[in-house]
Image (cartoon, one colour):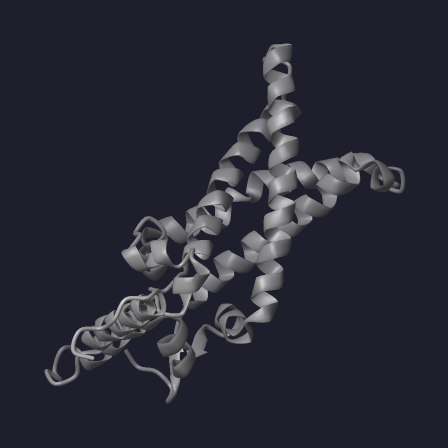
Length: 241
């Protein structure tokens, strides 16, 4: 893998395009949805029908960038990253404890990012189905229409909270945010924040030619050292001391 000195590519161009298209559509949906259903905002919307039309078509377009990323030949890395969301390690489980978080050896995504991606993907399906029922409601009985409206509204509220949280976390980590704009992160960030992924990248760079370098072994050793320190902190004495 060819990289500039001190930089590691994290997201390729297609992944960044998919992300920003998806983010733009989400923001349009949240803005138009709030203006349609939130009382104080709905009273200031001058062209309600136009806003409703934009909301509907933005919702219908929402799955398109993701499907394009999954189906296009250029989406190999995107498909690889999507598969990571369903792979959970022991370190991922330990990450939820603040006491253990400093010693975990994470892959490309932390557990919060994995859950966020899974929730957003599920939300797209739910919002598309329930929104379609609300828009083209005539074939459906009242119970289905009422249930669809209830689910649509509450998923909207949850998405609003998640999107705001996602933006705040992204703004707090400049290096991570840069990777979704320019595609790369500084290597020290990768080694510190995502050591298991950093080891993958280093191994791919070397192509297995350097038998003396074992970045994955370094990651495992660092994790074991962190676990040992954690045990000492909880009252267990290391053997030999």
